[in-house]
Structures are given as structure tokens and as C-alpha cells.
Image (cartoon, rainbow, N blue to C red; front, top):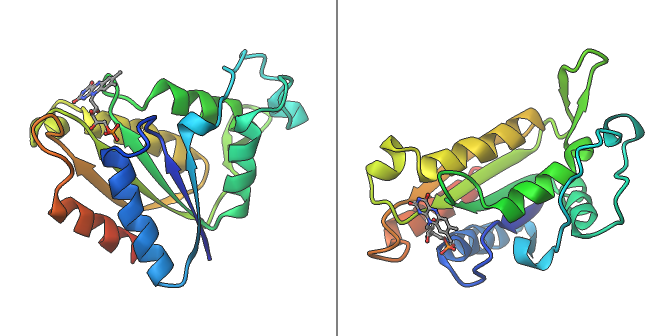
Length: 189
Ligand SMILES: Cc1cc2nc3c(=O)[nH]c(=O)nc-3n(C[C@H](O)[C@H](O)[C@H](O)COP(=O)(O)O)c2cc1C
């Protein structure tokens, strides 16, 4: 089995990184091969919305980090994505990357019904935000980022086996309890 770990935070040593590292370490300890990619290393140009990829299955823009991400997703059996909450959503950099590879994530029937292209693959989502618990959930802060990430992964066919959310990162870094939850999530792959 191969696990792709995607750090959706531009902070390479931040809370999301720590949560994903716990998953990565646990997966490796269980004999799972892992690859780690940070969104800030991908340098993806925004989608121009031409929709031609839906029929041609390729992007008209020059190849960049988006295609690298798609190749890595294509090669993996499972995905762990870390999404810091930005304005109750996923960071723009990460959304831009998934916009650019929509053609490799889901197909469409002639009348626009989505066809998932990664059926059978498992996924873990981790999120963090400064809003403390329970308001990170109630006010859809980390919860909002998770919802947005679920939207992408579910329509692409991924089965979300675990979600871990850390609130209150202004006051404290990711807790030992949440790191344990991340390791537990890796055991569900
Ligand atoms: C541009 C930006 C927008 C943010 N928006 C929110 C927000 O809407 N709600 C929130 O609780 N935290 C928000 N945050 C705080 C981050 O979610 C928080 O610092 C998180 O721990 C970042 O994870 P990281 O340490 O892995 O980068 C925002 C941070 C940035 C940089």
C-alpha cells in the first residue's frame, strides 16, 4: 500500500505538519510506503475555467505542480490531507491545485453527473484553526475546512475513514491527544 500525505498548509513546520507527521510515522511503522508533498512546493497556476479538460482529459495550461500532484494521487492507494482553516475553508493554494486537476479526480456523464475516478481509495482529513473547541466545530471553522475537503474527496471516490480537528491553535499547539488521534487514524488505512 502507498500513502500520499499532502500538507495543505504553507507552514512547513506548523500544526498541520505535526499532525500529518504523526500519520506518516504510524503508517511507515505499519509497513506502508509513504510520499509527502507540501502545497507550497507545488507552485500551481489558477484554473482558467475553460472546461476543456472535461472532454480532453488534459489541461490547456502549461504543465506545473498540479500535474505532479495528480500523478502522485494516481499512484497512491490512500491519501492523508491536512487543511488549516482559512476563512472557514481550505487555503486558496490547495483549492487552486484541486481545481486544476478536476479532470483526473472525477469524470462526468454527458448530462454532468459526476463519476468518481478514485473509487476504493481511503482518505484521512486533518484540520487546525485558532478558534477554540467547541466553536471551531459550531461556527464551522476547522469544520468548514473539513467540509470543503470532503466535497473534493467524496466526489472523487475516496472513502473518508477518519477526521481529526484541532481547535485553539492561537493559545496552544496541537495536543498530544490529537497527535494520538492522528496515529489512530493511520491504523484505519
Ligand atoms: C489567511 C488565514 C486565514 C485564517 N482563517 C482562519 C479562520 O477563518 N478561522 C480560524 O479559526 N483560524 C483561521 N486561521 C488560523 C489558522 O487556521 C491556524 O493558524 C492554523 O493553526 C494554521 O495551521 P498551520 O499551523 O499548520 O499552518 C487563518 C490563518 C490564515 C493564515
